[in-house]
Image (tube, rainbow, N blue to C red; front, top):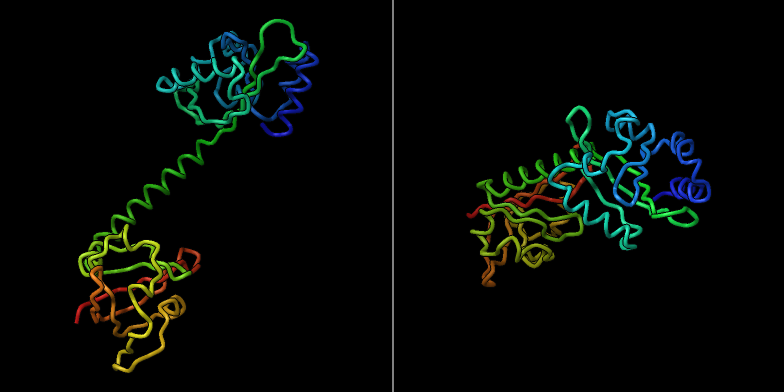
Length: 258
């Protein structure tokens, strides 16, 4: 829980009668829950997040607000909190709103004991991360789609990062060189493309470092080493790999048999 929430919970510990007023002025959505998981208080930020009034939330079991598939796990975790376990944990829960939508919240839970009479209470501070989760899922889907597309490109291609390490091989490159992507990933590029055996397009030997292709595309001929240690001379074309902002991420080495 962040410092502001710690200060809030600290003030609540010493002044039980100030719960309502203290929670109302906190911009972070907060739920005060008793040891039976009954909601004692929801502050205005929490009400706005879920679409309920304070009266509609109060006295309900907190499980009623949690997505069905997460209820059992949430109940077990709540019991652990009340038994003194996982006191500083932060985790995510999917909450149901009054409009039957859902929001994903990053929860920080603090048990309030100290001088309060009776059983302990739990103070749940939540941060809506629905958008972040959706964006992460979108990026993951895009990354998987791009990876699948790259794997199926018919031209044998190796992707090398800016430090000169192999990051990816597509299926055509695996078939050509005998290396699987898992076996080649992480190797220094020169293990597969020795510098001493690189020729320019006119057949002259050149002192070419594959990493220079990051700055400038290059084409020529090079001897590559396959998995069995056999040297194969191939036509090579390099192109920089850049992101949408023009930042160079690595180099694509495209191969072709003579």
